[in-house]
Amino acid sequence: MRNRLLALPLVAGAAALALTGCATSSASGEASSDGTIKVVASTNVYGSIVETIGGDAVSVTSILDDPSQDPHSFESSARTQLAVSKADLLIENGGGYDDFMTTLADASDTKADTINVVKLSGLDKGGDTEFNEHVFYSYPTMVKLVDEVTKELSALDEGSQDAFEENADALTTKLEDLKSQTDAVKQQDAGDKVAYTEPVPGYLFDAMGLENETPDAFSEAIEEDDDVPPAALRDTLALFTSGGVRLLAYNDQTSSPETEQVQKAAEENDVPVVGVTETLPEGQDYVSWQQANIDAVKAALQK
Ligand SMILES: [Zn+2]
Image 1 (cartoon, rainbow, N blue to C red):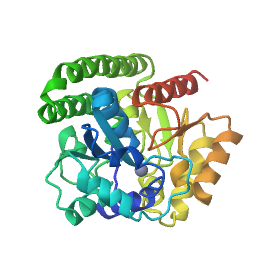
Image 2: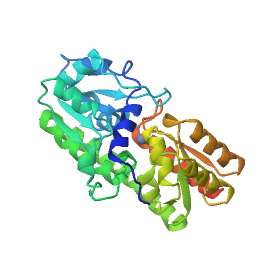
Image 3: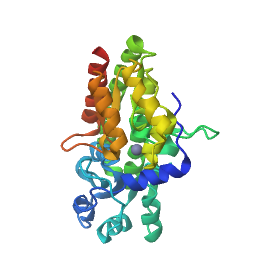
Image 4: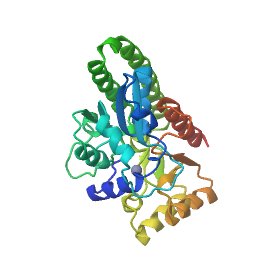
């Protein structure tokens, strides 16, 4: 499947997304005198990965961390700005997803390195196809990120390098296990047709060989927070009445009357609905979150 997202909409999507939990997330990042490496990540997805590698040697501030809140415009708080200005390492998604990170870094005099995960991924080949910026659903990209984070942390705290590498190896093994689970789904279900309200799980579906049938005009409008063209809505709803798809992936963080209508159509036609998020649910780490996503997709495909 090729997802066509306009460049501008990505910014709109990011702004819409950008929003949540800045008030609750910053405390640990401000611990300045305890000798830990201070890392600021744009979302708790990346924050989780850094914590797993860095353990007690890092203090992580995740700017966006609450999937249950309604999106609202991200406003950088003094606290967030302070965390960025004191950071030893910054991690951003890139690709227009979290431009507020650039704004925050520019507004501080930080000399910290920034890891841009979209750049690291190598997934954006340019050209005419609009890029799906949800690279945190790509496990090979997360393996690259683990490597990069480990290098950066080791340069900042050489004494902890062995511990970082050990943690990184364990995490990479788990990511590779997730990857092999997607390979197994591909063996069995490649070519099955699916739908989503927004291309959040696009890379996961690609890895599983699942084919997205959602009209681009629908998912783009949802991502952009634009009005959905009536024909696109009609075509999307028809996927469920015609038996055209095996499941609907539904992103609660960008719900609207149209996505709710689509969800209802899926439910009325016994098409399983799989919830997906862009930030970690409470109490989950990256691996447990993605394991739950894989399990939910597999369960849906078995129905
Ligand atoms: Zn999104």
